[in-house]
Image 1 (cartoon, rainbow, N blue to C red):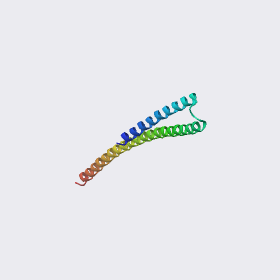
Image 2 (cartoon, rainbow, N blue to C red):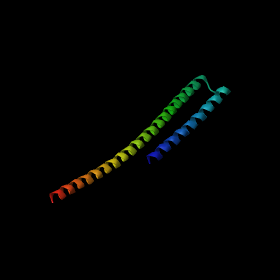
Image 3 (cartoon, helix red, strand yellow):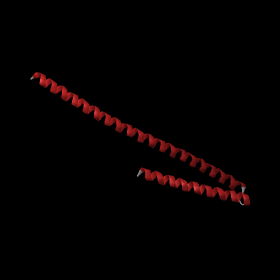
Length: 109
């Protein structure tokens, strides 16, 4: 479910990036045609720059999240391996204890 949620967020961000590109192209065309006034151009440019910066930060955070997920997966794998080793060790110790007990019992007889 978490992966689905993250995928939806990435798709939403991709849609936002496409909207940004469309707005950016529209602004360029307005500038070429001379339709935008200087004040509108500045505000639009500032907003576009801010959106692009935000989008870049989100991409960086997505990469960090992916790296953290990989690290967590590796850690869980290591934990499972250690648990298996502990089980094996405990089984060997139990067998050794049984053998020692049997040896003691045989000696006492």
